[in-house]
Amino acid sequence: MFWQGYKNSHFQASSISQFTLSRTECPFFGDTVPESVKYFLYDMKDAHFYGKKLKNKGDQELNWIEYACEFIGTAIHVSFGLAGIFLVSQMNIGDITKFFIIGCFFATGLLVVIYSPIGKRSGGHLNPAVTTAFWLNGLMTGLDTLWYIIAQFAGAVFGAWVAFIIFPWQTFYTTLTLPAMEYPLLISLFIEFTIIFVLIMTIFSFVSSDRSGRFTGIAAACYVVLITVLFATISGASMNLARTFGTAAILMRFDYLLLYFTASVLGAFAAYYLFSKATKGAKPVCSKLCHKTEGPCLFKCTCEYSHITKIQSTMPNMNNSGLKSCNDPLLTGEESLPWN
Image (cartoon, rainbow, N blue to C red; front, side, top):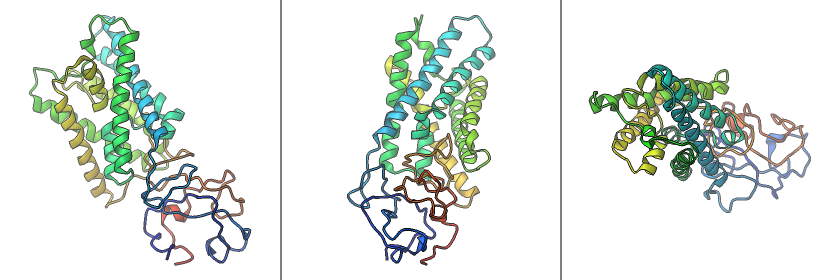
């Protein structure tokens, strides 16, 4: 039957208008709902709905708005950071102060994007390792993951290009992310791996808590500042493969890109594995670093606000805006459904 199989699944609810169910066909709504209700529950595990009907259950839409948000967001993040690098290049200050200022600029760009409408729409990942980790947890489709990563790399290149045009650089090579030559490359690889691993574990931990979820972006920004100060003189403190690629692509200097790529991939897989083991297979609750925002959402997480056709507020767990509540048993799978 259509209703079977939802109790223990990561159920997502949405709506496809132009469907009518009577109260006898959908006992969940009881006797308080009008007999004619344009409401249709749909399993959104492999397909997403943004105001238009999907042809088939397995069809997947290309979410161009989200991809564009990741592109713009990454460009802003990189531009902010390069502005900080240009600023300190004009100052005669110590290394700790210099890298603290640079870290603050990158962190500010990150915060601006995450808590802006751009980040609230796409999730504000801005980092291929973060996107990959969410995909490994099954919270994104492979196609969305691919386009997110493409948008992040393209956005980083565009952001670097804008910064190169705006500021009168004496040398562009100060913008490259490079490991220190006085340390073995294995040390730099291990540091970068650890940086990515801790970053993703931090994000997973914060977004999975109602209390700390809204502070995920702030935690990530503080982490960026800390890592920049501690490890910029050793491994380069990449933290973000897209950001590293942005300046390298324009200057055609890919000397150590493989090192950062390896660390990024291994860090994402290791964080996914440890988080899965530590939580006994549980997934991060939310995939947005701004946490639980209303509106369209392509992620398959249990906190997702799903747009449905606006129906009367007499429906259980329905707020006045017509959005499904995050605490609805249909979304959480915590309670038995009446028709089971």
